[in-house]
Image (cartoon, rainbow, N blue to C red; front, side, top):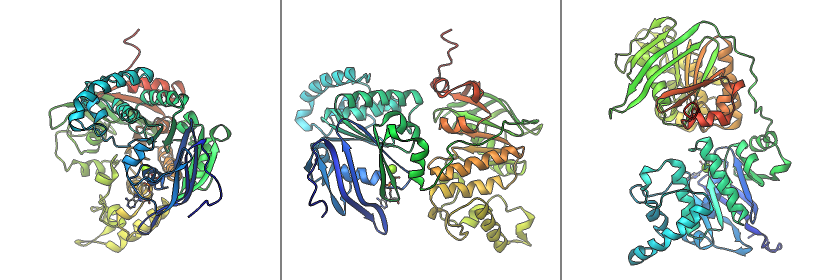
Length: 518
Ligand code: ADP
Ligand code: MG
């Protein structure tokens, strides 16, 4: 046991001493110390797998630490389960909300706190408290609304209300802005500041440096299961935090020369896609991308960006006109069209690489070989030349800095960032005229993001056309030569990065063009 000496500090909402936790051979938390001052917003940052969620799960009673102690408000506290965490005044807002879809807001807030015969009378009491909380924290959520009718931003507020209803003093939020529009994220931050100013303590887990700089008072950095630093936000910079997260200097800005667009490579007119339920997902898209140009498509997930990538890649049917290098592409065909599109010079890095980009149980070289089956280099008679495919894969892995560079390893055994590099290596080295790329750095660590961005810009500079779809506005702003914003199946605005900002793009993403008001 640790810390026989130091007395607990009652000014600390939370103090962790010597927390360790392993999953089999993986040491997710190694001898972690953390001190969170009462009435502050304390950020915890770190790359994927650094151990952030594990640490918070220990604090919330989901996991039991192998060693270490937890002090809440200066008192040593055992947290064997989440009821104990709630009793200790800790509330958690989950990354994937745990609300009951067909219950009302009110029922969800009360659920679990009051059961059985007590439920009905306490609903009335809860309704009153809820209105009060909603007014205090400008959380305008209708208590009678059914959860499934609410957007994600509102559902998240319900999670927060639920914690406050249980009288939480300490609120933990694990990557809360991943699903929000910029405007919703701003609203969340206003709520969190309000809660802090009333004396509540907030722990905010995120990998977004901009958010950390904007809202936290203090930041702790985790790397490979260890707590590597705790600094005052006012005394640090995004560059320093990135270096602490990765363990080396990282370029946060993409270095790129102005685009020199050539002829139009892709021309799309009145493109429409209707899904299997008969819902129109693309409602007449017009766009054009030139050689040597990156068109960034911004938008909140679910506004037709996925369908745009799929129909262009040949994975979905649609109507309208697509012209590639002045040749019309047939849109009436079937699923085998993806291969035809590849042959015509379209490469595709799909949004969901685990489902569409890779076969997880196949080895790296087999995955890298997809789509090259008709390539003469790898065909010796009727059999594929597996040795040649392996050697080709090894060379690609080398160039794309895939770690470990082992062609025989199954795709599932690489980290998210390295899986993405494998897909990128395969698609970029097809030497396509047009690269379709969806969420290129989702789930990817900062170090790999830097590399992936460099590769996308390098492809542009070779004169290729690139359609980039991303929900990360930072990424759209950094890479795009032009930005199109999608909302409800349409492109509702186009901007030059130099003539817009995240605020304006955020309004467009929420469907507000400003023209309606004028
Ligand atoms: P973060 O939230 O910082 O991305 P996590 O705490 O989720 O990191 O994960 C830390 C490490 O522990 C990772 O290597 C992860 O794969 C591993 N891990 C987390 N949860 C489990 C689990 N339930 N079983 C096995 N390994 C786990
Ligand atoms: Mg996590």
